[in-house]
Length: 189
Image (cartoon, rainbow, N blue to C red; front, top):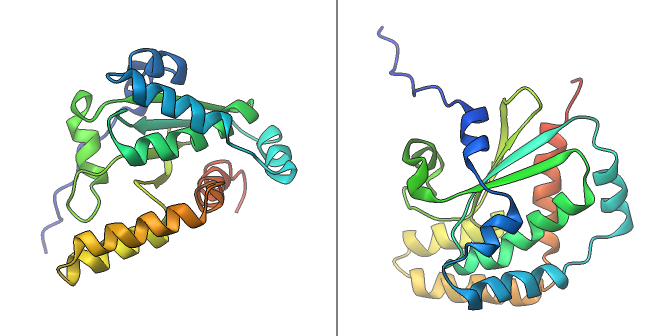
């Protein structure tokens, strides 16, 4: 039986090095209004002491490639969560890239065949891809998938908006991103 074709290897170190830091990314935002919303969302982020303690003691270096563009509402909502984690974690470093910069990378992280952002790819200290997240929490992704299946994407988006409204502190996003960090920081199974 023939082996299936393999995807090309990604040199994550090169991809990461080509990205920009959060501050550079916000400074280059296409929309100053969205940049202000990003900053306002970041200022409203509150991490629990337990999360801060965990982030401060990550046992190994973790890098995240964030595929994000400031025009997207989910980016404006979720990137500040990632940034707040980065600020609290000495062993976490994030770089931002747009979709078009690395199309081979982005196409690996489509959501049900769609180009949805943000996408956060978690890499350990050896540049091994360990987890990915996005473009929204799992419960919201499921609602969107079910809405597409039922032919009601508008209704699904409305339900997602209701979930977002019910979670203003973005606890579901924090929980899921902390899980990705936990996976990427694993030193022994």
